[in-house]
Amino acid sequence: MKKLIIANWKLNPTTLKEAQRLAGSISSKAKNTVVLCPPTIFLSQVGFKNLGAQDCFWQERGAFTGQTSALQLKSLKIKYCIVGHSEKRATGDTDEMVNAKVKSLLENKITPVMCVGFGTTVEQDDLEVVDILRHQLDIGLKGVDASKVIVAYEPVWAIGTGKNASPEHAEKISLFVKTKYNASKVLYGGSVNLYNAKPFLDQPNIGGLLVGGESLIPSHFNQIINM
Ligand code: PEP
Image 1 (cartoon, helix red, strand yellow):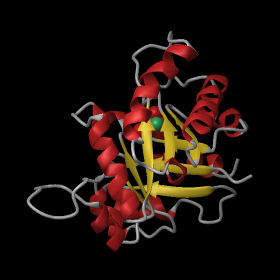
Image 2 (cartoon, protein in one colour; image 1 turned 180 degrees about the vertical axis):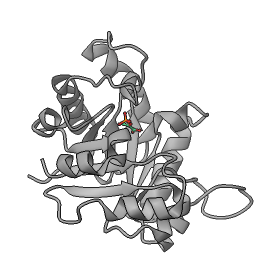
Image 3 (tube, rainbow, N blue to C red; image 1 turned 90 degrees about the vertical axis):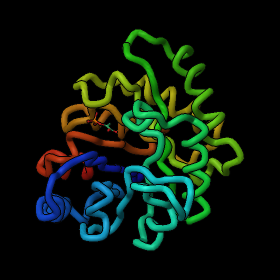
Image 4 (cartoon, rainbow, N blue to C red; image 1 turned 135 degrees about the vertical axis):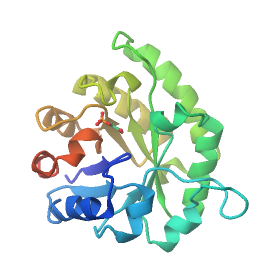
């Protein structure tokens, strides 16, 4: 079955030319469904079938300097938008803000990719993880039809560190999120690379991957999207 693989380019690359070159080097005929999330400023000029934004604001218009709304993303035919990434939570996004963003995206028919995850150590057991995730999910999905939302499980200690969670742990969490919250898909993210991606994709309840650093290396990313 096809899995969903989302590339989060974060604040890379630094020029439009490079962004176009990078997008052009990603296979458009991959085995799995691929979504590229370049920086917002490049979204309208990076040609790729499925594009996503890395964040949005919950209000559609008005006096909100520097923000980008779901309504504006819709005008560019953007299909997906990440919300609640730990790097946004670290600069102040709360579960309530994430919830407001999810609602605004759904109103604009954009699929939210809601990131959940926490923790600074690998030493947390599954029950402890579930307990804290429950809080993020209860608030983030409050009043929302979760069957229209993709949840990305990203342990914070695994993001950009070179230390990934085990596929078995991610599978357990995915099963929990699917059964308890009815999310349309659960992705795993956190130091996914060419060498560790396959066992995650082989798990029945992991619907795909959210890939950061490795998505900037086309020779690696093109192999991941074809696994
Ligand atoms: C991310 O930013 O969502 C992510 C998973 O990053 P990385 O793959 O670099 O750990």
